Length: 400
Image (cartoon, rainbow, N blue to C red):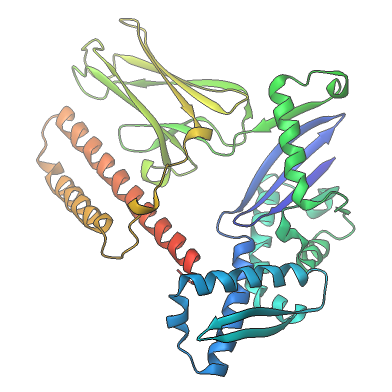
């Protein structure tokens, strides 16, 4: 039995295919859109009601958008209206004393709401099609669909799914807000080994969401554990020295599906020192990547000659950044941009000097510095865009 789990929460959209047979659950694969969720539907109502209010009262919309507290009050009202439109054909967005002592009162029909959100509804289909194609499945291969997340209660979403998967039952017998809690209970029990009478015939199989690989000398990624691998798992590959008398091995671990380092996320690195100095290609490094049931990644580097070994443990669940509001710089002309420009200059300098390097070691060192600078630049750029996106979400801008 193949089940699609359609999870549309407040901030993200995830879709997965689960295979169920004889109380064995196996995640076949998943896809989604990390920039689509309930907040986007809220923002459509914010845009609609604010434009109407400003048009009727001759106010500058940009001025009101810059008032954080005012937009926050409107945001809460729009969220409530979104919920009511799931059970009623019409509702009114009301914010007393909204701006300049004037109330905001905006009537919205479900039909109007669905029209203004049409582009968001269309974005729900692409990840579904992508996932089915990756697994060589057709719509008719699906036996059941489960809706998860508060935003999946929107009637139009259920209609879209029903039209796409004709004659496939949609299971909405469980409250979409509670499904995740049930899943967390099952996952927690799986870590204990399904102990007790209730769980005796129960089994759960999960797969990696992204590939895990090691950076090579030219900055490309050699995949050790491919995306979609069932874990726990342990896999290894071999690497050799890239220049004569090389005495260290730098192991850089990346997660993602990109071909090169800058297209993926650096999740850990370590160095093996004092390896035997030999002509290039003669000293071999074995890198093993293991993933346990807790999704903890262990990377081990081992050089047989000299019995040199080092281990790195990566706990993805504890890698959330500890950001403090006062340290977040949201200005377009921030220090972040200055650092971006300085790194850009370094990258251009490395590229210009490459042809002047004579030995393999010098060329390798320059490539390594270039790759490090490029990764740092792209990470900074990504952080900058993410912070800008967060800021625009906070103040209610629709197109950050």
